[in-house]
Length: 164
Image (cartoon, rainbow, N blue to C red; front, side):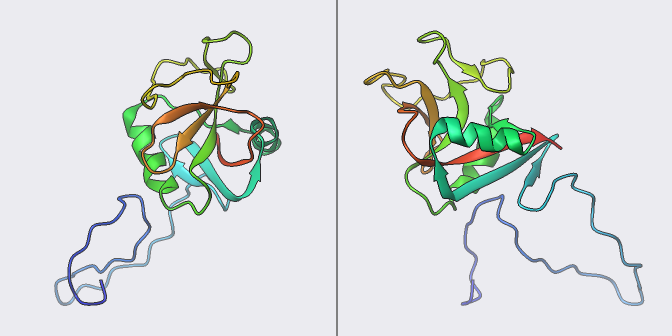
């Protein structure tokens, strides 16, 4: 930090760095790696993620926006993927939760992802899913990364995911 002391921060925050070289070396410049993601997207493994925290939408409108970007609202398939996303969304300026691609609107309790991938990895918050007043859409709490079945008509930020 500015006082010259160590501090903890998110592992996924982009920070500058300093390299140490032994004297007499003159390395050639390298080009930036090709991330395969458009501006505004972050690469993680084989996928690009876009975090929209300012322009909130209903779940259906958020999915439509992700579709227009050749993607879907995000799905989750491992603790590592969820940890990456949670680290990023904790810096999000909007509300308490963001939309993801999970829903049980076709069959109550039959959760699925909008991208058609298997719904196997789960991380429900305590007492969820509870179908409170017919909640059918999955949001993720910004502060904890736990999931909630939510009212699809709420306006929330959202996370889009597409192949890198």
